[in-house]
Length: 112
Image 1 (cartoon, rainbow, N blue to C red):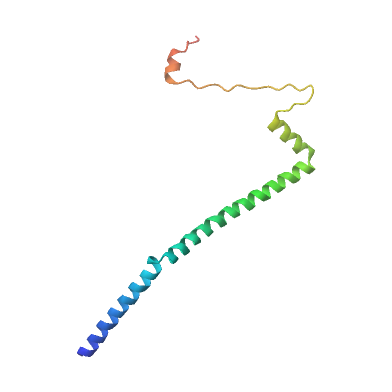
Image 2 (tube, rainbow, N blue to C red):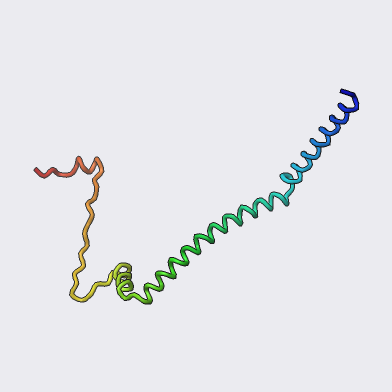
């Protein structure tokens, strides 16, 4: 190998390293690039929120349509959310059994 060829290769490596360093610095060292990446992430996040909101909007539109057109569904919602009962109906409330702690269990009287 000739000395000129080695010098040319060395110069090319130096120029390549300098070029790569400048590109890396411009991309990752500049505020503009960081802002671009940050805005890209925010856009992606907002798009996923938008997809969820569109789905919820569709669900609410279907429910509104049911409320407006189906009297039995409206009655169901009134009974469920407002606790209404029809005349002559009896409403029952069932109590759930409370689980005792180990200390309460020892203190509770035993039924033979």
